[in-house]
Image (cartoon, rainbow, N blue to C red; front, side, top):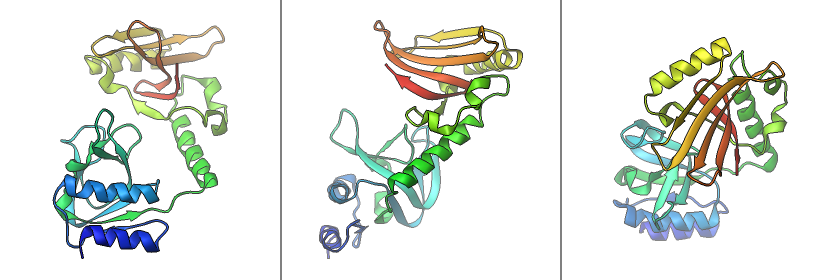
Length: 238
């Protein structure tokens, strides 16, 4: 039985279809139409099961940073921006092309149970609570007092280490600014966006900091709270 036939039969008997590759496929061109059929019946995430431990790109450091896994959980498939090619992610902010997977060793793609709205909300609140615990003790005294529910409609957290030239110097200055509650400001124009970071003691006696990423010449972009010297969180988009 071909992989295509196996997939079709599984869709006919399951609400959340699974893909069993027996015989295996060897290229992204063979795998992509099968995954797209799965996506028509399941909009959630998948677990990829391999026939042996393999190295798979999963993180923020690009294709050269890989993780050895026998199963890759919480995979979300999507069409890559600007292309018609399929990509995957296990994070919210970074993805990889389907051909980055060791496809000849892939044996099954298992649909994970989708969380209920209440479960999704509880999971999101846990993530927000973890972010709030990362606030520097000298900063955002008012922010720490708010319940996680106050941030449900705002973005998550990410590192700003790679955003500026000479990151060790910038992060070092930010550490000193947070420790001493002093003002600093840095900007970067090396990318298509204008990036800036600022710290200051506000009139109400609370030390605050911000990170922004704006499109050049229009004043629109993404604006975040800088909750410690390396972490931006709770973005708003203009």
